[in-house]
Length: 198
Length: 261
Image (cartoon, rainbow over all chains, first blue to last red):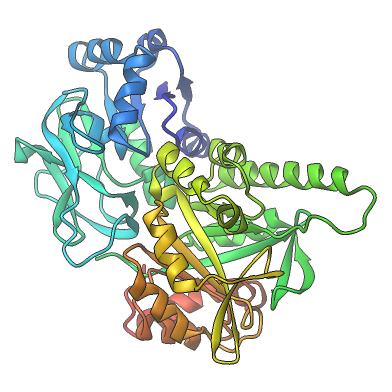
């Protein structure tokens, strides 16, 4: 059973709908305690880092997430803002501490000679050490910030938009994806299906 | 490399898809859910729904219609979101953050607001602070009259004094994530896009611009992509009336060397 965390940062419906189309069991998780009962955890989300981490604290998710993801090693997937929140520090609207599952920071896309937000379909290039989820090809993006992991070896796919940036990170039971598999038609749904089988 | 998007627009009036011409002549052409299957099979880049159901008029049952209309569009959105996994943009008659909340909660990724933000510009920052700037697309309807480009609101019914270029800059500074421009005088005519004003809008802002209004053939798409740095090519009627229009258009664009998916 895949649990999708509801923390007021949007996009929950699309992820649930994608799993329904796939015929895979998925539930919305509104209470931190419910994380115990699910086998896989997804943190979706669009919007600002500050709001995201504040809501996770307010709703009491932070401690339970650490318990389930870091200690119990439940498979975890962060999508877009959810991926950014996995890191130690965000800089959207000031400096804020993230969940700190991974070391590194979240900064604005360098975006040389391109406009922000980065919105639309762009090509994802898998790296050699890639990847359990087989993320590649054209995927849908909508964001202005990106992650800068301290340990570059966790980056398993990249994209180029005014500079190369990480699209996917993987470490043990943790996955983060900057693009939106729930909005990328069949190939996106395949990613979500693969995650549920990790 | 980021692809130039090709976006079908479906205009809804009282819950049915209509063909639009110069914002004034509407013909019902179908049920929004039936059309969806085709568009989803083609794996389109994004879909824009615009509710152009008009308020006002002399119908005594007006308020009933209004409520029904609103309910219908949310149930249409729900249905669409359930059966597809693609970026969905909804617009039309949005005046409040509560309406935006309803769209976003039911599967929309972005909203297009035109008159609503013209009347209350703070709606832009309300939406962008709640959902991020990428969630708010500001619609600008432009009509070429003589040599002048005039801006209209209220479904092309009311002319306003603002200069479209200054207005585009203003909404960008207020936090708009994208701009959607439509040409009233070219809408549904098949005369091709108004390259001149589209170019000017694009160069006056630093956010993505989606252009609509006037596509009659696939060559019009190619011309728009070649002549401007538009982020997305949008069109309505051509996708409703031409057999396999979407995949064929993509093929033609690719053949012309345009960077599409």
